Length: 380
Image (cartoon, rainbow, N blue to C red; front, side, top):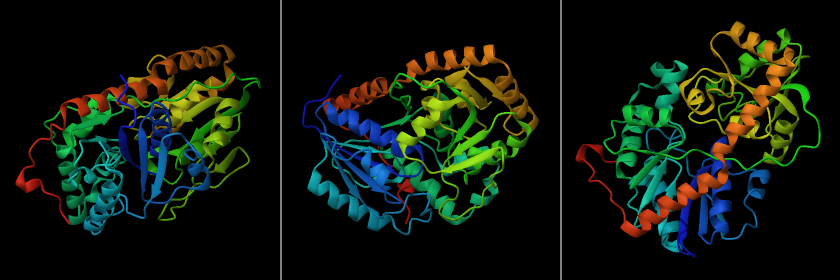
């Protein structure tokens, strides 16, 4: 279901990881249906390659801010400033729908109905990575309260998998049921070059949740070379594993360059400890890679029957899985075919249709925002 042409949609996004790919792709497709989309960045400004993904698109405009992401400002020091900046932008644009790819901003007193899409959060990340003790101070209590307040204020909230929706509902004690709308990827172009004997990994190398240093360490035990795409260090400059004769770190690639890597690789490996969806896995499957994935609930939900799974905390299990796939041409071909067929379930067109249907419902019925308990007000 498509909303009336000219409907003004304001969407926030950050540029760290897959959220930008999600927001850019959704904005492009929604803008093509006749929406006026204003994409507003929080956190680090987009790179030239990221800007190019939305530059010149019909119906899509971009505003860059220097506002902190909520996990960069857990104590809420920038909260009132962020509220003023976004209110000024909204006053000029007058959105009819506000789509937030973050949590706390949902409590900023929007005049239009707002949705919140849960892509990840610090508390679920910490639980999966065994880091809960590092996030117990007052500032993280403020972060948790502000996330909960934003989620409870939203007209609707969405997660990309049932497993992550249930985790978010449990962590933040949400009474309102969340929707599940899977992320989506475009169909891959017809491949003319043959697959290469390469194992590919992708993600923020510095992020413990991605566990890519384990993949790099395993490379010396494998016959096939390993290539890992992604930023080597984050805002805090975290160290990563060193490259070796069997492992190449490609650095941060443009989306086009990354798609070329997917097209060439025979196997895509993700040893993630935590992944609410895994857009890189979907893009690898769309490009015909055999999938070797960590055995975590979200990956099981999405890829059971179309991937090989291993315990991400057992390097021997990961090495055995990758060794077997590299050595067994028939099994690898079967998994490549199975991954491609499963990826059809998660087409970008289906994601766009689901969001457009939700936007239409909110425009038709208004914003059924629940009352905010007094003890859940935003904390700054």
